[in-house]
Image 1 (tube, rainbow, N blue to C red):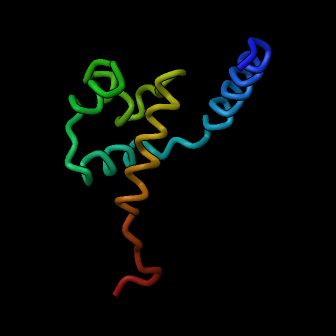
Image 2 (image 1 turned 90 degrees about the vertical axis):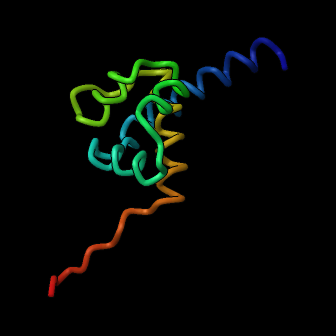
Image 3 (image 1 turned 180 degrees about the vertical axis):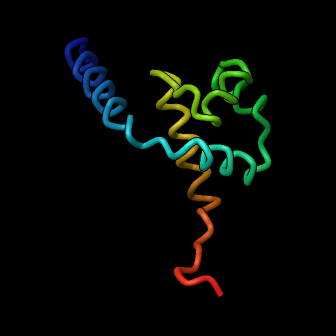
Length: 94
């Protein structure tokens, strides 16, 4: 791959990451997905090379991940959402 093509790909990747900014589920859903998979905050933190307290902040909504961790976290959450879809709630509770 040429240096120019590599630069173009990096620019496109940056745009994709920026576009993914809205792709984060709510903090409550982030926690639900992690727990549904049986993962601890420590496991997620280790995989993303952050502290456990950072994951806690993401799951409580105090903070949001920043690039490049954000894209990796979104990838994890998307994968978990595929495996553990949100339960559907009836429109009219009985």
